[in-house]
Image (cartoon, rainbow, N blue to C red; front, side, top):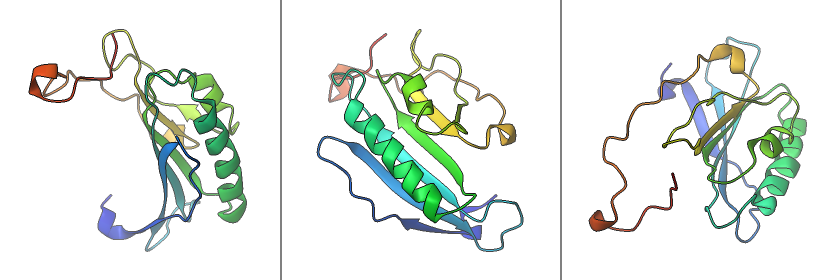
Length: 145
């Protein structure tokens, strides 16, 4: 798969204050599967916003509206979730599954990849960071072990 085989556009979605995410739409140039488009959300939830209800509410409302507009779309919600309850994120749409099922930093699973296409993915391989978070190199990490 190559991105040159897709058109990519940023979706015009209102993002509430204090919500950090962006929405996009990928469309295959030559659709060959049952999915004619893919709705994508990249998110970040700071660790000090325990639960981040505003982000969960935004995703819930937005994903339903976008799936109503883009019928039978594949869905990808990915990002650094810190302390969001992943079950709350998955509850935004019953077709979603989390494919990152093991810790990504120490004993914590910081990264989330939810999709309605879990059958197309194997469990991700979690590798050590190439350059570990280090406050002496710049901004202190917001990741907690």
